[in-house]
Length: 334
Image (cartoon, rainbow, N blue to C red; front, side):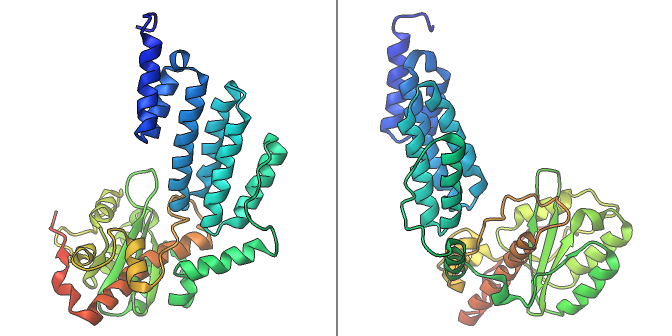
């Protein structure tokens, strides 16, 4: 009961306990729910710590577009309490984390935007000298696998059966690595296939709209054993895509490369596995982009193709040690 004399101390204790235990998201939730009881100061502190945690997470995932959203959330709480220092602190953390992620040009642009738009001045934290965009690009090239290191060109999006048949012929024989991208709607947006001969990117909804497209997809998918990486959800997305005719067979020969890595080195994710076996991680900055958008940007197509190519290259690395196919778990028929 909010009218009870003990309600305010109870709310304050709850928020403080969450903050002391590092449960910053829960502290923010409780402080927002009971802001009239625990005070504006606790709400600002909880929102700030939650915001700092979230900034570190989204930058690690390279979801840079979410940084501004997090800062805005802290601003809303801080303005109520006229807490200028909290607004500076969240921005300082954002700049520091972005700089550590070799996104200094973005950090500088945000610092300038916040000063001009919001009236909040924050030290950049690094020397603003030279062409930061060029320096950042060089740092990312050293850190992440680049498409031009493994592909002759960024594949174009294929959306008709004739082009798909021709492209698959060029892929040749042997295992085909695959990956799937999707957005909010049901099913898959893209299917990527890669062999030693190259990679293709397929517009799944467009191809599935016709029986000819479905037949071409089936030929591409049935042409050789498939190598995925944690691919159960990929297959589920393909099966859930509305189609003019069925094309993903229940007995499709699909092997999950992730199971081989759990017996060796490398983390559970594809990016970590790439770091362990290819020497550089995968750049995930496009992971949350709009995969239903047409046309896709070159950055989106490069990202999509690299995911499939990385699976193939990791498989080849494993085969150089032993016959990795023996350790792969075949996805059970559905």
